[in-house]
Structure formats: C-alpha cells, structure tokens
Image 1 (spheres, rainbow, N blue to C red):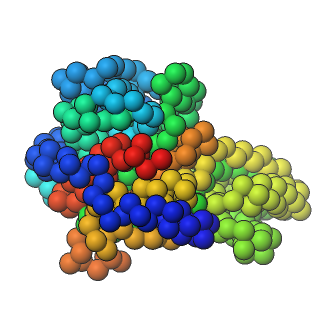
Image 2: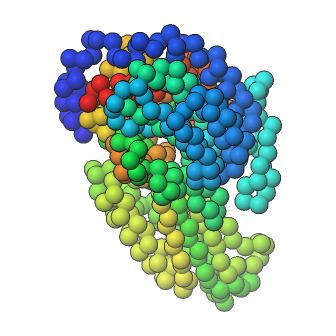
Image 3: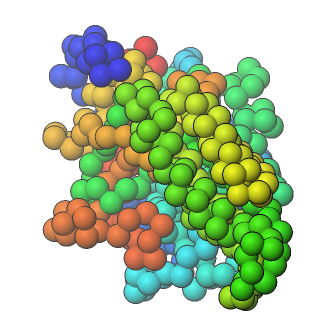
Length: 430
C-alpha cells in the first residue's frame, strides 16, 4: 500500500512545484475565517444528539440557501442536508462531507461558549456536548461552501456539500448515518459524486493534516452477548447455573482470540467488553447476564475469522458451564481508508493547504468512522486535521469524546483550504 502511494505521488510530482488552482482563492478563504469560528462556537454551544440534529440542520440549510446553490435538499436520512453547486466549467461531480451530531457528554472545558444543552439518550435526560469536533466539521464545510459559491465560475464540475447526521450511531431501533444517506440515493443518479473527502478534528498539532494510505480507521462491530443460566440462592450455587461466573470466563477468553487465534500479520484486531449487567442482590445468582462490547478490525478476512472464533468460544464456554448464550454482532462502520491513487494526486493540494512539513503520514487508528460506507461505493479521502495545542505534550491533550475536548480555532482555516482545494483541484489533477 505504501509503495502504491509513493508511486502515485511520483506520478503527480511534476505538478507539486506549481500553485494549485485553489491558491487563486486564498484571499477569499482567509476572508471567511471569522465566520467559520463564529459558526463553530454557535454549534458548539447548541449541540444535538444523533438523528435529533433539528436546529443544526435548519441553520445549515438556511445558510446554504443564501448562497444561491442549484439545490438544497433537507430531511436526508432524517436530518441530513445536501447542497449542490454546479460550477461554471464542465467537470466531474465530487462530494465534501461533514458530520453534525454530538455526544451524551457533560462538558468541562470552561469555554465561554460551553454547552449547557441536554437531550434524551436511551430514555434518560443527559448532557450533550460536541466532544468529537463535529461542530468544527460543520463550520469548515460551511466556509468552503461560501468560498466555492462565490467563485463558481472558476469551478470545474459539481460539488455536493453533504452534512451527515448520526455519525456516532443512530438511536436503538432507528436507521441513520452514512448508510442511510446512501440507501436514500445520495450516490445514485446523473449527479452522483465520483469521489468524496472528509476531515476529522484530532488532538494532533494544530494545523497539521494526517493521512494513511489504505486502512486508516478501523471497522467497528457492536457486540451483544446474553448468557442464560438458572437462578438460585448465592449460598448454594450447585443448585443452579451461574451466568455471572460464565460471563466472567467469556470476557477473559475473548481477549485471547486476537492474540492467539488470528493471523495478526493481516491486520490488528481488538475485542472490548464495555458493559456487563446481571443480578440485583449479592446472595442471588440471577438467570441472565447481558454483556455489550465492540470489535475493531482492519481486514475483512480477519473480521470474518474473529466473528467465527468468538461465536465458537462463547458457545463452548457456556456449554461447559451448563448455560446457554446468544451472540449478536452488527456492523457499525466499515474500514475508513485513503485511496492511494487519489491521495497521491491530491497531495500537492494538501501541502499547499497545511504548509510545508505539516502533511504527515499517520498510523492505523482503532477508532471508527462511518465515512467508510461512502468508500464502499466511490474512492475517498479521510484526513485528520490537528486541532491540539502544540505547547501541550501530545499524551496530555484531551482526546476525542473527552469532556475536556476542545479545538484550536486557528487550525480551522487549514480545513477550509483542504476542502476548497479538493473541490477546485480534483478535476485538474485527473
């Protein structure tokens, strides 16, 4: 994969010395910076959970309508918004994507625009925070839309601005996210995009762009296990079947699957049990125990092998203890990648956007992103935009999903440049 990237970069290296077409829009990009920051602060202060981004989508749609786009579609995958801009020159259709949803997290940043919002999550009222940077994603894409609409006569082709709901996962019993947008036809029709880009705020040094050719972020599966035994008094466990004891063995044994039963040379894998519930009293062995977890992989073959070994392990341990177990595995997100050829083509643009020495090759990340669903249909690029304070050691910076997560706002203009650059330069680099 790395050799393919090197070859692609070499193929387009003759273009690296010349300024990319997007460079002509540098002044217009700089002019939207204050708007981008203001938008980010507004969305940060008023976050909404997955599939409930009602006010967020209304604000986005209202803004896009002021740009006199060719179309503004709302209600996509519940609350998604898709704006379409046809350029003044013939060319391909491409898409720029930002996700909109926030998380059930109590903010502790102390920012003057910190969230005090609440929402409903799993039937309970919870605090809500943009703890994963989606507020910055929205603002940067709005800024890019402004610049591109103001310069549509210079644009070759068509750009779709995709504001996606429910990246963090729709509520139980609901559809949503990238998969639902695709199911509703986003990637079909005469104006279907042939390539797509997304950015994600990350606690790397502010203003850097980080990539990895091939698999960048892991596929994610949700795991649910129900162990059923037979209830009895805690003083006489031999009179029943203990599902807690059985669940403990299962939780431990699952950790041996990646390390002892998978070919790790094909790609890393992680199994985590994050929730175990069973029983109500210390002297009652319950009938059932429920376990919830997540599975992360980078290779579909490894994923299939892991699923099979996991099911066998759970069934065998349950049987050995006289219990039964049900296993439910459902896909949450596929592997998020960077197409090596497309990455090589666009590298000069990203180097212009971030500046010399600020486009960096990263490592595989076991976090997941549903952007990978788009990439199952069309080539895509997904880069991390550094928003961390370089003066703070990397290990001490709040991570995504932390109640302390924040973004250096001077980094956001780099993201706008990258998005505008992709839209303006894609056709030129074909």
